[in-house]
Image 1 (cartoon, rainbow, N blue to C red):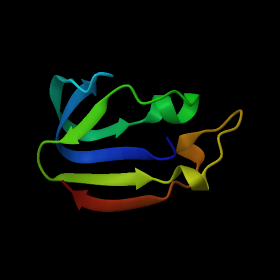
Image 2 (image 1 turned 90 degrees about the vertical axis):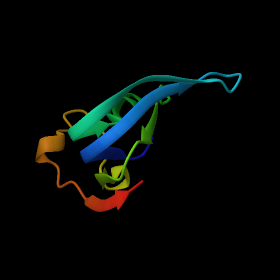
Image 3 (image 1 turned 30 degrees about the horizontal axis):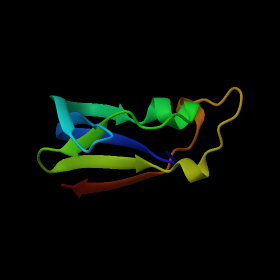
Amino acid sequence: LRDLMLVKSGRIAMGHTAMNGRRFQLGTLECDNQLFGEMEFFTGYRCQLDIIAEEPLEVARIDGEQHHCHQGFDVAESALAFHGFTGR
C-alpha cells in the first residue's frame, strides 16, 4: 500500500474476500474524516479488508510517494499532499 485514503464524508461497506472468492460483508460505516490504510502503510502488511463505496464519497488521497517512512516520522508535521476528488 503506497497511499492513504481519507474519506471526508459518505458511507462505505467493509468486507473480506476469501481465497475461494466468496465475499463477506462485515458492516457499513458513515464516514466523517475516516482514515483508511494507515496500518498497512506504516507496517507493510497486506490489506485485510475490502472498502467499497456505498454512495458517492468525498475523499482525499495522501500520496505516500512524497513521504518517506523513517524513525520519528510524524504525519502531523509532514506536508501531506491531498488530491481530493468525489468518487463512487
